[in-house]
Length: 87
Image 1 (spheres, rainbow, N blue to C red):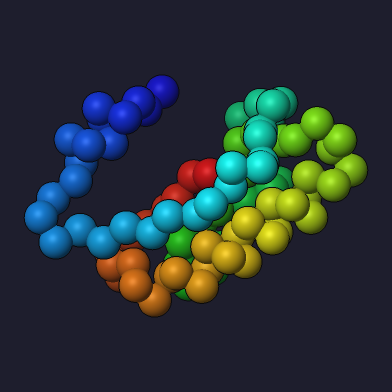
Image 2 (cartoon, helix red, strand yellow):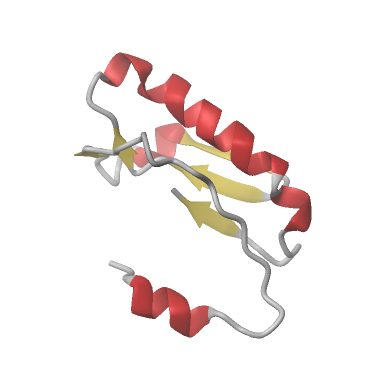
């Protein structure tokens, strides 16, 4: 599992970043790795996978879609060499 030190070690001068304010969203239930393929999608050659689901599963896909919609707005500022993002 990646921690903050792993992430920091990957940063290079000139790297671009995007933040997403999700302070009110808490992923409580981990999605089984074999099932993640069913909730992965691609936008502009970047894959997105939700690895955790919210309590109240019936609204989780809707909430995830809202988060991704906001994130996709930032995509033009990301480097074109990005291949995947895990949320």
